[in-house]
Image (cartoon, rainbow, N blue to C red; front, top):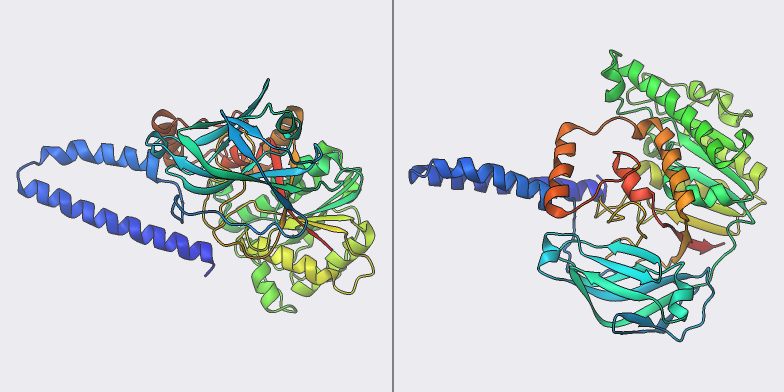
Length: 467
């Protein structure tokens, strides 16, 4: 069981315990002849839970975030005077700038999301943190270097205060646009969620998707399809998405590849490299139907077997063919999804012994262990660093700024993805309505799926390691 599954199991156990205690309390009230009180309390308690306590937050808001940015980053002292951030440090406008500061929630910040607004003349950004926050956090100032240098950058706490002596972490920029980029996507839409802005601006980009993402096809079962038929249809649609949607960003069809392995079966493949791992729901043992849109043959086409050895052979051919200078893939510590972990491991294993090696590895996190809502805040906001309570291995942050037209194009690319199109369940829509009324949270203007809020942002955030 993964760490995230363990945390979720503990979270649900605690909620069940709270429910039992609540029921015992209601029985006690009934015994006191206050039978009418639960009729009033139950709806109010449920609404309060949905508005303020339904987030999956598996750590205390008072804990400090901790990062090791490695030897590529340096730290400089800065000050805040009358809300204006002052710095004498030297940096370029493209450098990644991270402000380490203690954020303390006010009493209202326990009910409304606390945020720090960054204002420089007509430019306005907002970065949001956990309700009740009281610890070290990391603001992303990338793209605001000129305003910081000129003393025009104001920091305004909304439902929170900034305390202590802040520190500015500076990571020199790396050239991202004039180099060959390959994005490794475990599923269709991972490349767009994490790196649409990056690959859409690159001189040469490749998008390689590892799985068809065919499972959890209940939306298609509602059309009258059997479970296996629904999974097969969903896999075919997502295979098409993985080839077609990058064309919106100008990536030629010849550089979009779908490997067609089965969703959530990469761990089983890795555990027994020469044994096929059939689809969990599609009743398929052959990956070739999901590869029919590929522009050229690959080693796995020979027998269509969903094995780890075939996956490695496919990746080696693609790496040798594309010769990427920048390789983009899931982060091995921050992103806990099993397919994401295996995707990163497969790429690193495939690179062993090749005569071509990428110069830069960039890693992303589309899912987190501890906070399902990160990045917090609204569409269009900046992306503060994610929760991490132990520094672990050194990784340098690398943040790319997306202008508004690019954000809109990214939103349209996500809207083309079939997996993000089905409507949310009624309970989730009702929860969001209560959060909008009671907690002040705004929906994304681009779409109903949560990824429109989380991914269409002012920044794309990666973690960099030089080879």
